[in-house]
Length: 152
Image (cartoon, rainbow, N blue to C red; front, side, top):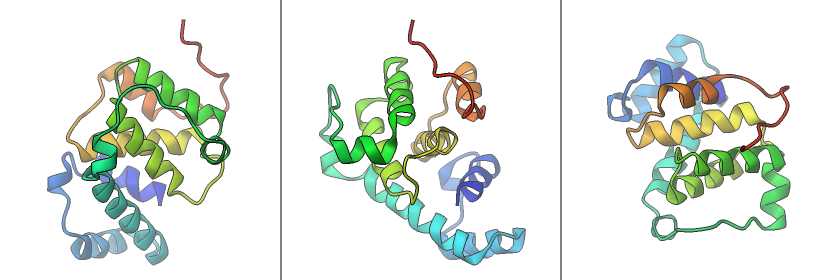
């Protein structure tokens, strides 16, 4: 699924340039993606669209406290990275909640940092926003094996 998300990000500059789900599924199949992965990615993207219009997510502001289940599902690296992005003003509280919701929708626990970065990129992409060049390098770089980043 994540390969498809990266493909969409790299292929369609804006989300409105992306074809409708049925046409997109045909294009992804023609490119060589597996039907199961395509279905999984389209479901995930549908959930992203639904999360973006949710009243509960629109109402969020302020500090985020994670419940035990979220901490277990996301993992400390993902939570730390989300907090880093929010403190760097890359994510608003609303975007943070969408990232968390979409990360929890994945079938992976804890969520790998590389996959969380793709989720962040897709959330920003879905809103027509792009991180600045330095943050883009940080998001697209695969540093799962590197030591955690310090905030100071």
